Image 1 (cartoon, rainbow, N blue to C red):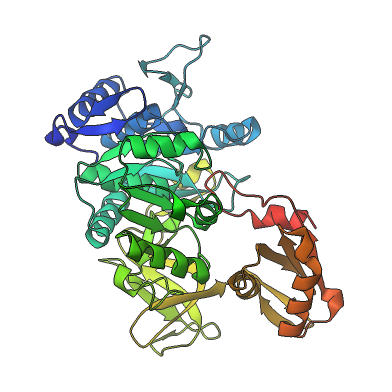
Image 2: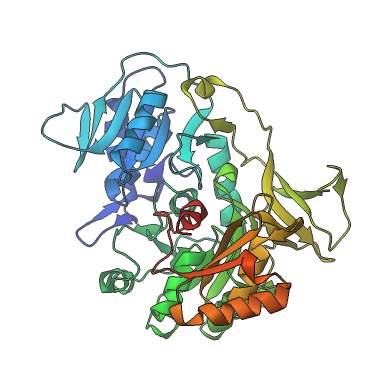
Length: 463
């Protein structure tokens, strides 16, 4: 259990920054000091999360002490933060200190202040709440338990073979399940985490990467597209040994490119699949299969299981090469969603079963392939059209595009202004659409969340 008995790793470096290093024993003692300042009775705590040591210390302290807490991006607009506070009425807030407030306890630049003195009805198993991707303006949250976190942490360590000698870096947000899973798995093994909020596009990030000999780099598809643009595969990164990708489907051409490069440079490149609702990970593609099955999400993680459900009659089936809704079973599945305060007292509503919302098929070897999203379809002249299918096809031709749309209108955003007519001709010839239903527009940059995920609803608004 990664948050308990951190002192078992003694003076080994735990959190490393450009200014200082904190050992595991020191982290344990800091957490104990914060825990001792917490009120009795289960509290709901809002953590205004940044990529810093203070956020990690708060996360560990509140998890260890058995309270429930919300990890919220500290940089979101004030209106959204206020909506969360009004909806869930947290008892305490962990945030950057200011002179106007009094704090129960402090650590460096963060302090814990009282907000709501009323006792809340909180389920005894409720631990962590995270915002779901795609609900940026909504107070909807995923409810996770310690058992969810521990289960997924153990599974990830098992298939990635994470060891104490590994060293990760915080290039993913700490309020994002993927970023937290990297923290959790490395803490469990006594590895070091280099804490930096520098952008992956900055020289400072890569200087820090090399200075502290980081071994592990992770990212969502958008990160990997940026890595390619900035020339990662030509950089001198002698300590890099492990790369993981999740948070969406990476174009298979890039999978092949990264995997081929990684093989030549003695680097492990692992493609994974997951959702916040599953704490983090549900599947992984064994490294030795990456080039053979470059479009696959792989197999279920240890102690997890996939099933496919027929799209028309809701019956499970075992046949290969047939599309169905992907269902996952495992101990890492959330308790359910929360949209209001009353939801925080509810018991587990899913019982370890998640309807992923993804459409998938499996091959004869038992490997799974995502073929679309249940909601990423439009109808053109009565025929169902998969936006993901068109997007992946055009990206396989090396066009930098995204697809969105409404019924009878396919909309494609391109970063290359000079490729608009060329793209339209390819789409019309490939899919036999009438030219009136296809709109292709140049945009300067894609709308993305701070975690690097595409905001397709915002993209639609650009048309």
